[in-house]
Image 1 (tube, rainbow, N blue to C red):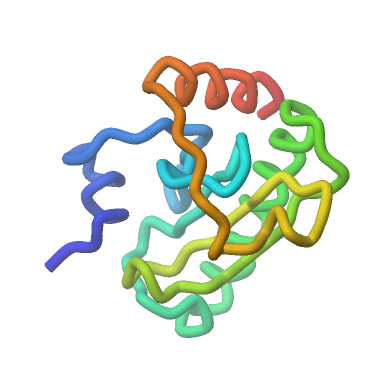
Image 2: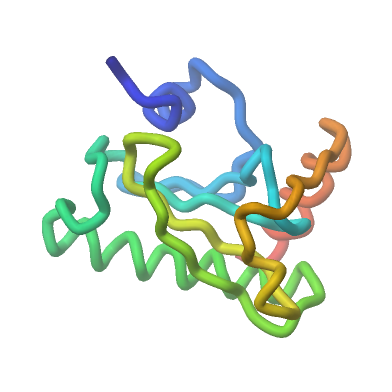
Length: 130
């Protein structure tokens, strides 16, 4: 059964897309810890990030670096945190989270809620810097 991320890639489930190329995709997390919290995924459906072949793994990190740079320019923050947890969706993914303190990256924090229009605005702000 395809993961929710594979369904997003296939266009079966909508997302707030930041960027996409032949092999990778970045879109806003709909349960964000911070404004601009973005997920970066390989289009190849593999559950565990360290099971990715080396070219896909390094390509994912390079794609994430480009997205992180755009987030940093669009969202005021000290840094972009990188987190790989991978338990909630069986598809390798990287969380890019704007942060000012370590607590900003605490996944037990209450998730933010944005309207469709707010998500679209955030995605647009980030895309300007891609």
